[in-house]
Image (tube, rainbow over all chains, first blue to last red; front, top):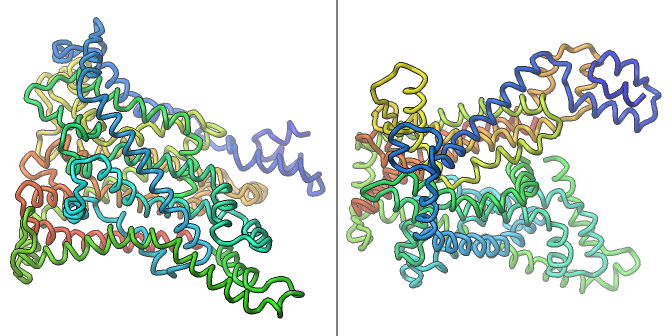
Length: 306
Length: 323
């Protein structure tokens, strides 16, 4: 019965699921209908399109890997795959400013993200649950995100200069921490709304104060959401270029996108070495994203569209 | 939205009125408790408000003041010049061209991303059940730092040994050189291709999730009523995802308006000024010409343009989502 019910053709389902069918069977039937509309024409077209998309996503990345193993001569000769892998590109990339840039990027990205969460969680919860600040606050909160960040760069540069934090990693970390609070609040909003109010009400009846409620109830319940939003913010920070290029001009504090952009402005460009350096820079963030991909997808889909 | 409203309105009574028996003796402590609660709420939103002050109000005031004065990078606010900067910015053909370029780039890139992304999401939904592997794969372009995406596509478009050049030479009789990024009319397309590659997966992900989340009962009802697959898609599936598609378009538009890294790495605004998008123009005015007053004035013009372009789409999105 269940097997017939899961068959895709709608006529079979009609026969298999009489109105009086037990509820769990009907549920299965329904899932079968809603999730797999394979009876639709053009499934081959869909598969073909998906395959094409996979190629379009992977070819540029594969090309970068291929480039990273070629000498300039091989590239200019129009080869697509290295005839004899030029591993020295990777050695050169490793012995450049790239590893230090990666370390700087990771520090600024992670510390910035933790600070962002610490600032954003209490605000997001209070705005969603108690509407403190009213519609003005919840409406304005995303406004800094709407305009290109270049808009805020000169005011922030001036501010950091006054604080003596220019050209330092702590200065950049602080900017990242503040910069992503609006996005974090916006992403957390969808998660907080999904917490059953009853949990909070129960804790309140048990005599928990607001601070305890936040620390002992809201934050633990939000756990996965915090990972999801945290990892999105880490990626945004790691990839950020504009602020990094102005706030970290000294060599020791440069983040990896700044180092890479610097390589591009060298007089003689070595495609192979730049490609290997780019891949080195991608590896840490890819690893984080793949390990936490479930959280990442959850954060993007729950947070961005509610 | 409506369920949230209900949830929210349910909180105050529950928090305000404790169980009946203790109600009258506890009247004073309750109001004190409410006061401390309110104090805590204010405390909790303080960081957010401070962030808004630092990231929105302070830059806004700074930019307004800079736009009304002669300001260099080292010495802002030298003397009050009134509307001189603003008039110069709004009347400058370079600024007008840049705004036009930014707007058409934003709308174009957002439209292409949304169409391709929605098509991919629907194809994915019809050909796989959960798409976990493919979803991970789709995350990759979004995770690559934009600077590296720019580098990557510069290589792909490079006339000397780039991917496209090489493929053209190997599979066609083409023998000239096709330098996408140094051609005034093709360069912006090259940047757009990189942008679409990077951010279309976000649209796919959002729309795909909306497709998985549609109510199976409605689809089933439509099937029982004898709706044809195409009708089902047009009358059941499409309306349920319309709000998400519109929201994805809006997000994509805002991201495209902000494009800077790709232009910086791929074309530096050139050739000529053919890829000088607003963010790049402001950056140049402020940090290459050190004319902060002019940069601030261009910023204000941009703010007006962005608002005018996004507001109608914002309201359209809202209406679609509330239905």
